[in-house]
View (tube, rainbow, N blue to C red):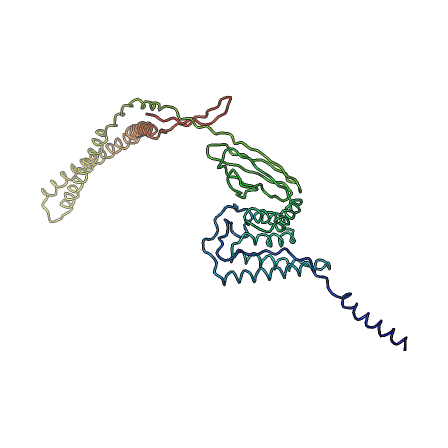
Length: 387
């Protein structure tokens, strides 16, 4: 009987211990982040997800309605669930990145619905677990600078996490002269000087570019190491522009006399004579042909035929002379045109073009003159203009 009672007590004790032995340990809860109560106006903020945007950008002016706030709260709760599930999987050395990605997406969507800077804390928490160090550090800093009054323990936790994240980054503070200089890193615009906050940069090599109106551009190579914090000061050199008093324009070129135009009188005379002789030869040739017809007519009298023979012969001789004169006059006209008139006319056109070009160059002369200026203290350009 005693043995049976002992076995019964042992069984009851085993049943009470077994649930504790197989129960799953609860992951450490994330700090609670409450959204702003109704009626509170969120402080200035930036566009969600833009880690490089300035922290003092104005928030959306429209106050979210209760339904929107409820939807955002639901997304925050869902993000917390995903985050806890990811922690649970990570402790058991199972893939947890997908759960952290879902948590980050839920937190980001909640911020899009209600732009409350306190949501930066869970966003940064998810980014930290995803090892997105630059984004996590940026959002932790925004939470600390923009969330306003928060629980002291939560603020201390955010500060602690920010310091831990910075161990994986380099922090660079830039002092740039003059103000208003455009700052670019690896070709990406960062902002204009003075920058409100130091830059969070992943370890590696960077190309810093600085440009400002009236100053020479500056390019500098930077090396960033994990856990480093540094300050760099840069001063852009002035690119001086000096405007001198106006000076008179250069005098116009001296007047070039217009060359004499070659005469066409001889060309016209030779051509006219050629045409006249050709017309005479044509006329006398026609008359000679007519006389030849009379001479060949058998019905004509002997006297008429004899007169036609003599007249036709004379006309034929005259025609031959006129044709020869036409050829001589035409040859003279052609020779004069090719050997005399054409070369003179070409030289005339050449001199006329040179005269016009000189005046065109004067008309196109610059009205503002740019001259390099260099001295021991700097350099630049000198602009001068004629009166």
